[in-house]
Length: 430
Image (cartoon, rainbow, N blue to C red; front, side):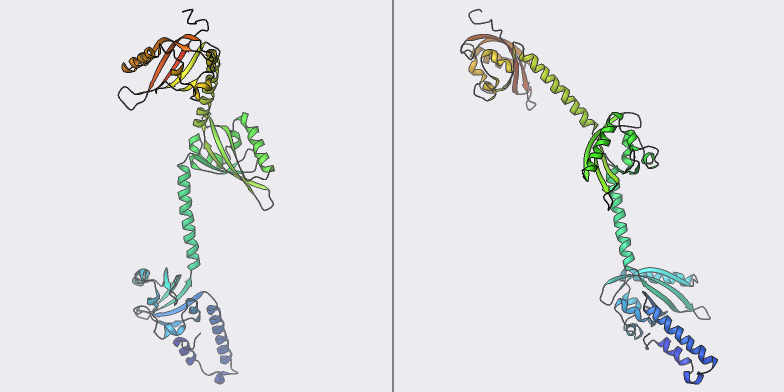
């Protein structure tokens, strides 16, 4: 220790000179004590534990401090000289807490106290310390000194703070997952994929997390039997290709036995040797989407069937815009019976009004205007049209009026209709 440590100097002066005791038993014991003291000083000064002896006075002036206080940037002289009081280096927001805790222990007659707080290094950096102090009292019970050991715990506090933030983030992510439709799994690379983790929102399928974690239910067992081999085969192919992730869609059984479609996003985990260890999976219920897709598929099949029926009949289906001369948005392919192609109309090359016989155009317009004015949903009329080879044909039109929702009664936007015109009904036959 620094020879300016008063306590140590006083202790040295109380011992007789080594020359006076050399050769005697007392001298041997004295030298052994000095060696032990030097060894103890060396251990302390090479450790992270700083030793203090503080007076029981304001801001705790130090009578003794070990040389390793240099770990905080200070020297022994800073404290022993009184230039620096220990209370001055305690972080201001922690100072009252330290004083109050110490006072509490004194009043209860406790022999010691322990506390964690922040101090400033000489460079002004904040360091966390753990202090364990022993309270010294005189014969009358009055507190005179505090013997303390101060340990730098800054790194531990940083680790604790990182852990705290990580746990908070984990809590947030868990809440996000459990409030989302996506169920998170961690499966072992074993038969039927036993789960080591599953998010709580597995309840949407009727199961609990413990159903899987306890191995009471294996994930492979809830996959629909007709899909299981395909799922196993897809997984094996992706593993053999060395891929790290893939998507798969299949059916599972809920706990109640209902079928649900799911989309699984799987991440393949491997060890340092490239061997597969486990799978991370995100399972999303896509049953509503599958129902829509199925309804759309059936609708398209029905549309295809109806289109076939229409195209094989004499009735031509139209969808006209409610603008001048009624441009065509759709016409069935059997328009060919009148000598036109569907593209002639849908491309805009021919407007429907262009093929209406000129002597009938006004009556057609007036019939349509009357139907709109009277807010009819549909109407029928007969008139003549010109075929592609300029023959005149009589047709019967049955039209349904589509309206928007922007005005009272609805403004007509489109007309869809069916025109019947058997090839035998030529103008001359009428």
